[in-house]
Figure 1 (tube, helix red, strand yellow):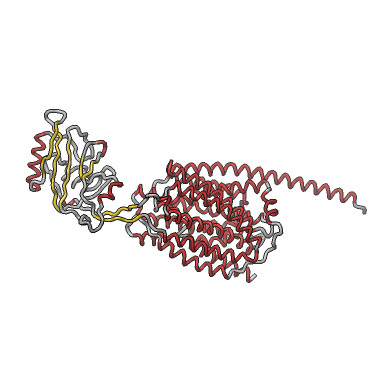
Figure 2 (figure 1 turned 120 degrees about the horizontal axis):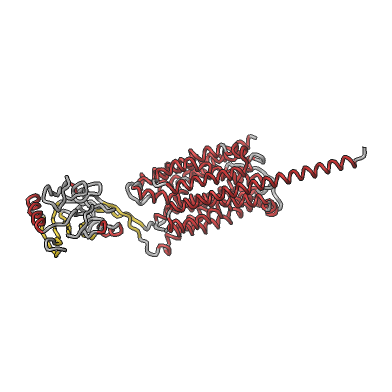
Length: 612
């Protein structure tokens, strides 16, 4: 008993260190690929192939663990070391992106906000063209400009809107405006060209003004230069050169305040995407990611098999009390690393994951030491592992349970692949990308520390109360709520409460139900093989199919529609599983009644034929 308690304590520590090491890495491994400019479609296809390999690898390693029972610890420790090497190498992949910073060099560009014919300098510059406007350091253009020209072309047929002009200019107004600007700013304004307008009293006029010692602000989304709230040059309320409803095209209070032109030193991310999918860095990333994720999945199912062996037959429902410590470790390190990555990266949109890999190596090295001292219990060895397992898998309800384990993996696999992509897309749309790693870290911490902890801790009582079948139906209902809610969200901060409330009854409860059921039905000496089969279906086939579909359609239809579609699939699973399980229970009750009747008949015949 003392050895069992000691081993359970070490298993708790193993789960804490093992999943704690992966808290900074697992949620970000696909985001790292996206930062390398690998498309969601390609990442989905890569994950599809990877999870097919996991589907084959988990049962195979489980079978070998049962077959070579005495060497299980060696296999287990070897997989931990392989995991450490593979994921650590991800941090050494040559980066194909770099941050380019500098003051934006003068460049005249033509913009057409609201379909007008306005031409102005530094207005509505497309992001793709901004790279050419930031000079390389040392070429003499990386300092703030000392003299700039602002060009504005005014046309008599321009509509009234929030652009550089609010009404056409008459010929007399142009002359008056030039005189007014001359008196205000010392002759900065000159007429450079004119063209006939639609009537004799109108003309198309180009005005040029030189404003010394000015830094210009680059704004996009139909805004222009200087000022705030969709204003234009130096003024407010969508006006130019002043306030109180004045515009550059009027003669009263028309001034240019150079103090409003304040902005900034800009930084952008520049990537070399030429031949990315043929480059060594792409295949280096794919190889390290695949080896690392395969090792992680094999270790997970092997850990569960060892845990159930230590717990002993009949105690499968107490698995959650051991696994909850892994959740605590995962959530804690995910939160710390999210803050550390944002802090370490500064204001750059190019995230530096070095703090995450440091946490990973420290925790996993400690876990290797911990696992070395775990004494694996002696269990009966099956002489026909494959035959024993296949006989169980032929049972009708076991077949249906395996299918719904696949569907649970289908729902969870999409969340693992796409949730952080979706959060970053929402953050970009809402202007909160600078804190995205902190938001993601808080999300994972709430998922685990406030969601999974509760359901892993009380999963034994929930399963004893509801049974394995009703638990699966309830899990699909919660997946429906979770996926649908995420599809309707428009702010990344709102994802936090949704994940906090739904991660427990979806992932934690479904995972515990699946592995506990696999342990309960496994013949003696086949625990690792049965865990490998069930896990291979759940996070092997389920994840692979979900990754393939999600990766392709995420780019085609967007995250919101895809989350809603997966929510509908979860709802259908809930309905179908409810009726399948109900039918299975009715059939089992009927068979038990028939057995009772047969037993009663046999007992009656024994009584009347036995001589007294």
